[in-house]
Image 1 (cartoon, rainbow, N blue to C red):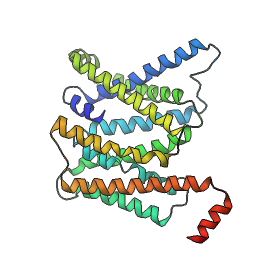
Image 2: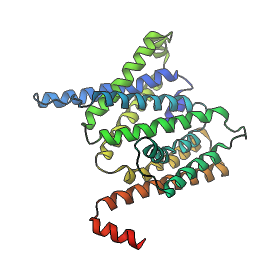
Image 3: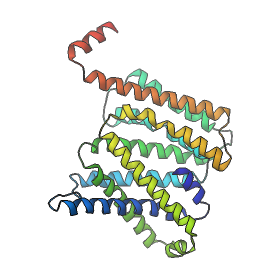
Image 4: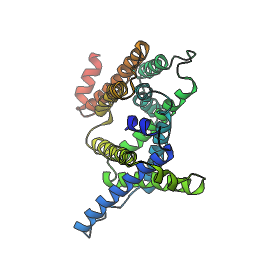
Length: 292
Protein backbone atom coordinates (compact mmCIF):
# COMPACT_ATOMS: atom_id res chain seq x y z
CA UNK A 1 0.00 0.00 0.00
CA UNK A 2 2.81 2.43 0.86
CA UNK A 3 4.41 1.84 -2.55
CA UNK A 4 1.14 2.49 -4.39
CA UNK A 5 0.65 5.65 -2.30
CA UNK A 6 4.16 6.81 -3.21
CA UNK A 7 3.48 6.27 -6.90
CA UNK A 8 -0.02 7.76 -6.96
CA UNK A 9 1.15 10.76 -4.92
CA UNK A 10 2.95 11.94 -8.03
CA UNK A 11 -0.42 12.43 -9.76
CA UNK A 12 -3.05 13.12 -7.09
CA UNK A 13 -3.12 15.16 -3.84
CA UNK A 14 -2.18 13.08 -0.79
CA UNK A 15 -5.22 14.43 1.08
CA UNK A 16 -7.49 12.88 -1.56
CA UNK A 17 -5.64 9.56 -1.26
CA UNK A 18 -6.08 9.62 2.53
CA UNK A 19 -9.79 10.39 2.25
CA UNK A 20 -10.32 7.60 -0.29
CA UNK A 21 -8.47 5.08 1.90
CA UNK A 22 -10.66 5.73 4.98
CA UNK A 23 -13.90 6.24 3.06
CA UNK A 24 -13.42 2.84 1.41
CA UNK A 25 -12.98 1.23 4.81
CA UNK A 26 -15.99 2.97 6.38
CA UNK A 27 -18.31 2.13 3.48
CA UNK A 28 -17.09 -1.46 3.07
CA UNK A 29 -17.47 -2.24 6.77
CA UNK A 30 -20.84 -0.45 6.97
CA UNK A 31 -22.12 -2.66 4.14
CA UNK A 32 -20.74 -5.78 5.85
CA UNK A 33 -22.26 -4.93 9.25
CA UNK A 34 -25.54 -3.92 7.61
CA UNK A 35 -25.66 -7.29 5.86
CA UNK A 36 -25.07 -9.03 9.20
CA UNK A 37 -27.92 -7.03 10.75
CA UNK A 38 -30.21 -7.90 7.83
CA UNK A 39 -29.54 -11.60 8.38
CA UNK A 40 -30.18 -11.28 12.13
CA UNK A 41 -32.45 -8.27 12.79
CA UNK A 42 -32.08 -8.69 16.56
CA UNK A 43 -28.28 -8.43 16.40
CA UNK A 44 -26.36 -5.22 17.17
CA UNK A 45 -23.30 -5.39 14.88
CA UNK A 46 -22.68 -1.62 15.15
CA UNK A 47 -22.55 -1.65 18.96
CA UNK A 48 -19.40 -0.19 20.52
CA UNK A 49 -18.89 -0.83 24.22
CA UNK A 50 -16.05 1.71 24.44
CA UNK A 51 -16.78 4.57 21.99
CA UNK A 52 -14.08 6.86 23.40
CA UNK A 53 -11.41 4.21 22.83
CA UNK A 54 -12.81 3.58 19.36
CA UNK A 55 -12.47 7.27 18.52
CA UNK A 56 -8.96 7.40 20.00
CA UNK A 57 -7.90 4.34 18.00
CA UNK A 58 -9.29 5.90 14.83
CA UNK A 59 -7.42 9.15 15.41
CA UNK A 60 -4.15 7.31 16.14
CA UNK A 61 -4.37 5.30 12.92
CA UNK A 62 -5.35 8.39 10.94
CA UNK A 63 -2.33 10.25 12.30
CA UNK A 64 -0.12 7.27 11.45
CA UNK A 65 -1.51 7.06 7.91
CA UNK A 66 -1.23 10.81 7.28
CA UNK A 67 2.42 10.90 8.38
CA UNK A 68 3.16 7.77 6.36
CA UNK A 69 1.38 8.90 3.18
CA UNK A 70 3.21 12.23 3.17
CA UNK A 71 6.49 10.68 4.34
CA UNK A 72 6.79 8.12 1.53
CA UNK A 73 6.64 10.99 -0.93
CA UNK A 74 9.89 12.31 0.60
CA UNK A 75 12.05 9.21 1.08
CA UNK A 76 12.34 5.62 -0.24
CA UNK A 77 9.72 3.17 1.02
CA UNK A 78 12.27 0.56 2.17
CA UNK A 79 14.18 2.98 4.43
CA UNK A 80 10.92 4.53 5.63
CA UNK A 81 9.58 1.08 6.50
CA UNK A 82 12.79 0.09 8.28
CA UNK A 83 12.78 3.16 10.54
CA UNK A 84 9.06 2.67 11.15
CA UNK A 85 9.96 -0.80 12.44
CA UNK A 86 11.03 0.90 15.66
CA UNK A 87 7.40 0.34 16.72
CA UNK A 88 7.99 -3.04 18.45
CA UNK A 89 10.83 -1.68 20.59
CA UNK A 90 8.85 1.49 21.27
CA UNK A 91 6.01 -0.68 22.54
CA UNK A 92 8.45 -2.06 25.13
CA UNK A 93 9.49 1.50 26.03
CA UNK A 94 5.90 2.74 26.32
CA UNK A 95 4.88 -0.29 28.37
CA UNK A 96 7.50 0.69 30.94
CA UNK A 97 6.82 4.43 30.94
CA UNK A 98 3.01 4.55 30.54
CA UNK A 99 1.74 1.19 31.75
CA UNK A 100 4.34 0.94 34.56
CA UNK A 101 5.28 -2.57 33.44
CA UNK A 102 8.59 -3.99 34.66
CA UNK A 103 11.20 -3.64 31.90
CA UNK A 104 14.38 -5.67 32.31
CA UNK A 105 17.90 -4.48 31.50
CA UNK A 106 17.92 -6.76 28.44
CA UNK A 107 14.75 -5.15 27.12
CA UNK A 108 16.24 -1.68 27.59
CA UNK A 109 19.32 -2.88 25.71
CA UNK A 110 17.10 -3.99 22.82
CA UNK A 111 15.40 -0.59 22.81
CA UNK A 112 18.81 1.06 22.56
CA UNK A 113 19.78 -1.43 19.83
CA UNK A 114 16.67 -0.56 17.86
CA UNK A 115 17.48 3.14 17.99
CA UNK A 116 21.09 2.39 17.03
CA UNK A 117 19.84 0.53 13.96
CA UNK A 118 17.64 3.48 13.04
CA UNK A 119 20.62 5.83 13.40
CA UNK A 120 22.66 3.65 11.03
CA UNK A 121 19.90 3.87 8.44
CA UNK A 122 19.45 7.62 8.96
CA UNK A 123 23.16 8.49 9.36
CA UNK A 124 22.70 11.96 10.94
CA UNK A 125 24.96 14.58 9.42
CA UNK A 126 25.40 12.66 6.19
CA UNK A 127 22.80 14.77 4.41
CA UNK A 128 21.26 11.56 3.04
CA UNK A 129 17.71 12.19 4.28
CA UNK A 130 17.72 15.32 6.47
CA UNK A 131 14.66 16.42 8.40
CA UNK A 132 12.35 14.04 6.49
CA UNK A 133 13.39 11.21 8.86
CA UNK A 134 10.99 12.83 11.34
CA UNK A 135 8.19 11.29 9.27
CA UNK A 136 9.00 7.62 9.99
CA UNK A 137 10.18 8.36 13.55
CA UNK A 138 6.91 10.12 14.42
CA UNK A 139 4.95 7.47 12.56
CA UNK A 140 6.61 4.76 14.68
CA UNK A 141 5.55 6.51 17.90
CA UNK A 142 1.92 6.88 16.82
CA UNK A 143 1.80 3.32 15.52
CA UNK A 144 3.22 1.93 18.78
CA UNK A 145 0.43 3.70 20.70
CA UNK A 146 -2.07 2.37 18.16
CA UNK A 147 -0.79 -1.20 18.63
CA UNK A 148 -1.07 -1.04 22.41
CA UNK A 149 -4.63 0.27 22.23
CA UNK A 150 -5.56 -2.30 19.55
CA UNK A 151 -4.28 -5.17 21.70
CA UNK A 152 -6.51 -3.93 24.54
CA UNK A 153 -9.58 -3.46 22.36
CA UNK A 154 -9.15 -6.74 20.48
CA UNK A 155 -10.66 -8.79 23.31
CA UNK A 156 -13.23 -6.19 24.39
CA UNK A 157 -14.95 -5.26 21.13
CA UNK A 158 -16.16 -6.89 17.94
CA UNK A 159 -13.26 -6.68 15.45
CA UNK A 160 -15.67 -5.74 12.66
CA UNK A 161 -17.29 -2.93 14.64
CA UNK A 162 -13.83 -1.70 15.67
CA UNK A 163 -12.75 -1.65 12.04
CA UNK A 164 -15.89 0.22 10.99
CA UNK A 165 -15.45 2.95 13.61
CA UNK A 166 -11.77 3.34 12.76
CA UNK A 167 -12.69 3.99 9.12
CA UNK A 168 -15.61 6.22 10.06
CA UNK A 169 -13.43 8.35 12.37
CA UNK A 170 -10.87 8.89 9.62
CA UNK A 171 -13.50 9.63 6.96
CA UNK A 172 -15.36 12.16 9.14
CA UNK A 173 -12.24 14.02 10.28
CA UNK A 174 -10.85 14.19 6.75
CA UNK A 175 -14.23 15.29 5.35
CA UNK A 176 -14.35 18.13 7.89
CA UNK A 177 -10.80 19.14 6.94
CA UNK A 178 -11.66 19.15 3.25
CA UNK A 179 -14.94 21.04 3.78
CA UNK A 180 -13.30 23.67 6.01
CA UNK A 181 -10.28 24.31 3.77
CA UNK A 182 -9.66 25.53 0.26
CA UNK A 183 -8.94 22.06 -1.12
CA UNK A 184 -10.58 21.61 -4.55
CA UNK A 185 -11.92 18.13 -3.86
CA UNK A 186 -14.33 17.74 -6.78
CA UNK A 187 -11.82 19.19 -9.24
CA UNK A 188 -9.18 16.69 -8.07
CA UNK A 189 -11.58 13.76 -8.48
CA UNK A 190 -12.80 14.90 -11.90
CA UNK A 191 -9.26 15.37 -13.19
CA UNK A 192 -8.19 11.85 -12.12
CA UNK A 193 -7.78 9.28 -14.88
CA UNK A 194 -9.70 5.97 -14.59
CA UNK A 195 -6.53 4.05 -13.75
CA UNK A 196 -5.76 6.53 -10.97
CA UNK A 197 -9.25 6.01 -9.50
CA UNK A 198 -8.56 2.27 -9.73
CA UNK A 199 -5.37 2.71 -7.70
CA UNK A 200 -7.33 4.75 -5.13
CA UNK A 201 -9.69 1.81 -4.75
CA UNK A 202 -6.72 -0.57 -4.47
CA UNK A 203 -5.24 1.52 -1.63
CA UNK A 204 -8.59 1.40 0.17
CA UNK A 205 -8.81 -2.35 -0.35
CA UNK A 206 -5.27 -3.01 0.93
CA UNK A 207 -5.68 -0.73 3.94
CA UNK A 208 -9.11 -2.08 4.85
CA UNK A 209 -8.34 -5.78 4.71
CA UNK A 210 -4.76 -5.46 5.96
CA UNK A 211 -5.82 -3.80 9.21
CA UNK A 212 -8.83 -6.08 9.60
CA UNK A 213 -6.46 -9.06 9.51
CA UNK A 214 -4.31 -7.29 12.15
CA UNK A 215 -7.30 -6.92 14.49
CA UNK A 216 -8.36 -10.54 13.98
CA UNK A 217 -4.80 -11.75 14.60
CA UNK A 218 -4.45 -9.75 17.83
CA UNK A 219 -7.66 -11.35 19.03
CA UNK A 220 -6.17 -14.82 18.51
CA UNK A 221 -2.53 -14.47 19.57
CA UNK A 222 -0.34 -12.27 21.82
CA UNK A 223 1.41 -9.28 20.29
CA UNK A 224 4.80 -10.90 20.95
CA UNK A 225 3.83 -13.90 18.82
CA UNK A 226 2.87 -11.71 15.89
CA UNK A 227 5.58 -9.04 15.91
CA UNK A 228 8.32 -11.11 14.17
CA UNK A 229 6.10 -11.40 11.10
CA UNK A 230 5.98 -7.60 10.83
CA UNK A 231 9.58 -7.59 9.63
CA UNK A 232 8.52 -9.24 6.39
CA UNK A 233 7.41 -5.69 5.49
CA UNK A 234 11.02 -4.58 5.11
CA UNK A 235 11.83 -7.28 2.57
CA UNK A 236 8.63 -6.63 0.62
CA UNK A 237 9.20 -2.85 0.66
CA UNK A 238 12.79 -3.29 -0.55
CA UNK A 239 11.69 -5.67 -3.35
CA UNK A 240 8.91 -3.36 -4.56
CA UNK A 241 11.22 -0.34 -4.30
CA UNK A 242 13.75 -2.07 -6.52
CA UNK A 243 11.19 -3.31 -9.07
CA UNK A 244 8.96 -0.23 -9.23
CA UNK A 245 11.29 2.66 -8.40
CA UNK A 246 14.73 1.22 -9.24
CA UNK A 247 15.92 1.90 -5.69
CA UNK A 248 17.74 -0.51 -3.41
CA UNK A 249 19.11 0.24 0.10
CA UNK A 250 22.90 0.59 0.28
CA UNK A 251 25.22 -1.41 2.52
CA UNK A 252 24.87 0.88 5.55
CA UNK A 253 21.09 0.85 5.21
CA UNK A 254 21.05 -2.97 5.15
CA UNK A 255 23.27 -3.01 8.24
CA UNK A 256 20.90 -0.70 10.09
CA UNK A 257 17.89 -2.71 8.89
CA UNK A 258 19.53 -5.88 10.22
CA UNK A 259 20.19 -4.31 13.65
CA UNK A 260 16.64 -2.97 13.77
CA UNK A 261 15.16 -6.33 12.81
CA UNK A 262 17.29 -8.26 15.27
CA UNK A 263 16.38 -5.91 18.14
CA UNK A 264 12.69 -5.97 17.34
CA UNK A 265 12.56 -9.73 16.81
CA UNK A 266 14.43 -10.33 20.09
CA UNK A 267 12.01 -8.02 21.93
CA UNK A 268 9.09 -9.94 20.43
CA UNK A 269 10.69 -13.26 21.44
CA UNK A 270 11.05 -12.04 25.03
CA UNK A 271 7.37 -11.05 25.03
CA UNK A 272 6.41 -14.50 23.78
CA UNK A 273 8.63 -16.17 26.38
CA UNK A 274 7.00 -14.10 29.12
CA UNK A 275 3.52 -15.09 27.94
CA UNK A 276 4.55 -18.76 28.00
CA UNK A 277 6.04 -18.38 31.50
CA UNK A 278 2.85 -16.74 32.77
CA UNK A 279 0.91 -19.82 31.69
CA UNK A 280 3.14 -22.26 33.59
CA UNK A 281 2.42 -23.41 37.17
CA UNK A 282 4.15 -21.30 39.82
CA UNK A 283 6.32 -24.25 40.92
CA UNK A 284 7.84 -24.64 37.44
CA UNK A 285 8.51 -20.91 37.12
CA UNK A 286 10.16 -20.88 40.57
CA UNK A 287 12.31 -23.88 39.68
CA UNK A 288 13.49 -22.22 36.44
CA UNK A 289 14.16 -18.93 38.25
CA UNK A 290 16.35 -20.69 40.83
CA UNK A 291 18.19 -22.56 38.07
CA UNK A 292 18.90 -19.28 36.25
